[in-house]
Length: 91
Image (cartoon, rainbow, N blue to C red; front, side, top):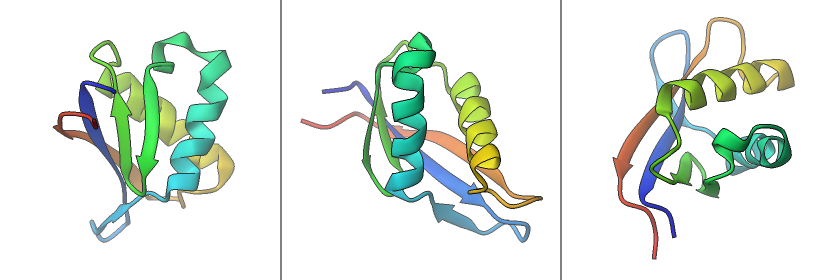
């Protein structure tokens, strides 16, 4: 159980918002499971959804996810990522 639920969205060049696929979020979470302890307290739960503990800072999370998604080719040139808190975590 995590204290926060986060929305992870891709923002296209026209400003349209799209939930990031679970496989993208999972790819980031698995990479950071061993490489960056600050993001260990995260759990991908569905398309566009990530649960996180209170100690996970949103701005660094957004920047790290955006960087990873760009390097993996998930985000196209001119697209960006939005990470926003939507409420409490799961059960």
